Image (cartoon, rainbow, N blue to C red):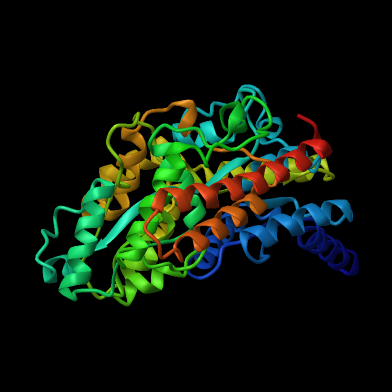
Length: 431
């Protein structure tokens, strides 16, 4: 009897302590944290021999910095969520195991949404796992539009329309301001992509490391000059660098908001007004590009065992399940990563009942898959975003009448700082 008891205890011990543990660092907070936890709980329940432990490690920038530092210290996680601007940094870090090495050469990635696959593909190989991709769209308050005498079903589609509608809203007293932006530097990048304009040389750094930015050329100057004009007319109200502008929209200080699709669910749940969404406004006379992918993917860190990599790949396959990625989209507003998940959502009538979630798909699928819209890949992009954000913040303080002259001066200065950053990066990592 004692021998049997010992054998049972040994078996229980192996079962309890024989799990393969996978540490997953991420930057999802607020309502997104609950969505991540639901995925982890579902996977762990289906895979009793594996335990994925998710840990919130701060903002996107903080999580990226911590991941690289942890690798150098020999204490890296298995998986880290890195936002799109960290792509070049991760490629050059010597700290990652490309996801195509986990899946093998025969795995069919054809079900992944095309623009997502394009962004994270390097040399025909996918380097990180699609997870929470997004794009920027225009949100608008239909109640404010009505109060200002505007048609709530005809949001602006051009820069000129946005400016005129914004002025009407402000002058009518329907709202304090016309529009605010989340992630302003990203919105600036989006304008280049949507209008088919390169942001940097070497095809946005995708055929070779970028050594020079183009955002201070005529197109970028025109965009920033427009924003200066909007700010002076109180059509544009600055709302911070990330998600702070959402509050100005929710409290009805502004009638419109350009923000990531990842905010659709949270804004809809909090808004006490009728909200609509539409495509990003454009300036006529430019080539047709496409909105560019934002959000983040999951990167696998080097230095782990084959058994752990097998467990990671099982987790990634779980993420790709149609029902999992569809539910992730419903909970957050991020793109479902696969075409099959989109079909499931359409078949269920989800998009018919939730048209604001459909906007981003229609926008990105109606664009053109050209190199200008594949995404920008810059060394030390995190620092470069800070430079551009600072330039935008500086520009909207201008009170003079030479909009384009001021925009050119500010962007030339930002470009000089950015090009120095790129030069320092290539000195370290090569061209």
